[in-house]
Image (tube, rainbow, N blue to C red; front, side):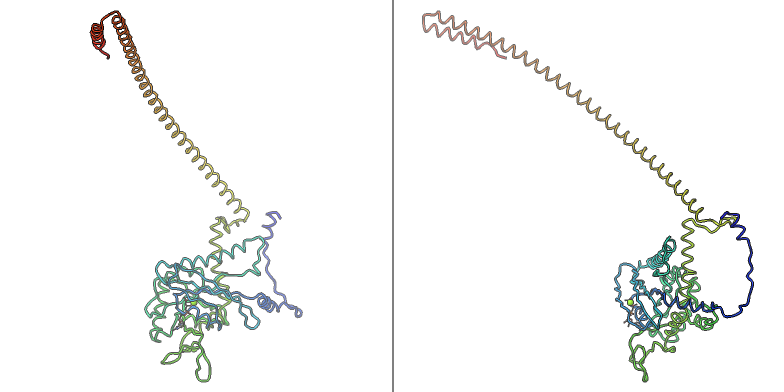
Length: 440
Ligand code: GTP
Ligand code: MG
């Protein structure tokens, strides 16, 4: 379709006209169809429990869903905060619920245990969903949605004020997840202290700009109850899976020497309010808020980071194709720049190595020349010595020849003498003349 056709069609303003029907058509069953489809499909609900080790997270989950989930006690010596998700298939009447409970194991135990792993976990679930949405062949229909729908933030019942770790963590999480703050183990704090503690907590949350989840008041059916419940936040809860006989009824409670704290007694704690708000009234709103508010924000930031925009300055819509082309161009020019940088780096390195090699060669040459000179000098000295020795040998040989000549003369002369005495005398004088010759 040409662009002009598109413009023409989009500019056509069509006002819907109201018509009355002549009889029953049947589309009034649409809500029932929707319900039936949802029931067949099942629901998923994901709860994140954040609170220090041993604060009562697992007990409260067991109490809320009236079952026993598999739980492991966390150690107080975890090296860092670790997120442990566990998924269960639950069924009530004909409704299937895929419930995931994620425990932030090791949170708040020691220093250096901050909220980052929790934020990363929540983001990772958003990212998985976004990746599924961006696939060409997506299967969102049977996709196991692991995005966190609610974060139950367990506050330690100190009666003082919120710890700074609590404030920092809730501040970091409030744009990513629906936070419902709860005061855990509320049976360990007196009624008047609890009242003051609640007011203090709410004051601190407001003054630090922490946005907690507000039960919606736009749906008439639940507006009143939700408005009342908003005023009760944070809920002070007690958890227990133990059953105690009160009157002639078995109730879930915690038994003490001085009495029994009944979990489902609204005079004892806010457990019923929490269950009402979390499960019976607002579960769907929590799911919806997660998708339309928190996930939407994540998706928008992520797509903007990737270079996608809805419109430019002149309010012209940006097409995906244009954005893709622009990103591709940007990427290619960046690639080219990097290539050129690397090429230049390579050339410089080669030049440096060449210079180093030349310097080494020059040094070697100088060394060689020096050695050659030393060698020649040594050779010349040896030659001189040899010549001297030859001359000495010649002189020695000459003198030896002279001595031998003298000896033979002397022997010859002695052989002419008749008398032995005279012979000896002559011989003696001959030897003395021989030995008078000095041998150098
Ligand atoms: P980790 O998973 O190990 O971090 O602990 P947790 O937060 O899951 O606590 P858990 O439910 O295991 O409870 C720890 C202890 O606190 C147990 O002895 C519970 O019986 C007790 N407890 C749980 N809820 C309450 C409560 O509301 N009041 C009181 N007084 N004790 C509770
Ligand atoms: Mg636990």
